[in-house]
Length: 338
Image (cartoon, rainbow, N blue to C red):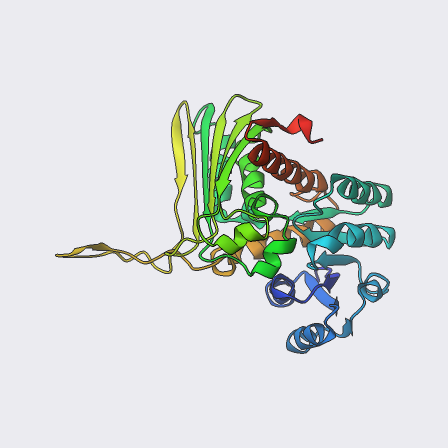
């Protein structure tokens, strides 16, 4: 019989519930044995639905639970670095949602704690596990397009998040674009050396009033000479817009949006197809399951996870560089940030 990894979940909000459900019902090699949330009722409800035996309002009770060998951190961003440190000190393997923190010193301290403890740390960049994006990356690695020249990433949400969330999110580059920064590295296996960011408030003036922007373009210059472009919007009226293109000396790869079906209807008025899936929970269901399977299996097989702590740090550097570029209206090298 396959050994099951016993897992504690910290944070019973939207993403915490998703991970807990997948671990409980979709990944037979895992067993959720504890869950905690500062809102105890949220943890209790999740535990009741998924038959999780231990519930607490204190994350430390999960970290100290003798049956827990790994934790999945889905709490608010401002707790991530602290909880990673505490989990490492408790000898638990760690999955943590992005970002680790907005402060590179806190990130480095957390990564040092993981290194000292000798535990595994995987960061939640789920889009790497999307089958279409992974196939594009594999084809690039196989040399199918020759030398990569241009990377284009489109990422647009169907609606802005609540203003209360935006106030503490770190802004568009550290909240939304951070996934695209990771994808930019992942797709062609080269580091970005320089970014130039432009943006504006075109969706909702209240977003500007809390110090953020809702529309952005970021150009990238890679170490291998390739160029990249990311475009973001907080509101695409037609749904969740997630597309990539990688173009090179021998060809190109395009990944289009996912739709509920691919039936196309034509009549005298035009050609009609389904809108994209509405939000990330639908679009990336497979990816969420696959990333959690990766975490469980890296423990069972005693190997490094596919998305490491350094992979979590670099997109934060890119996000900080993008903010600096936007504010100073100039290209910014990542070496200026750290």
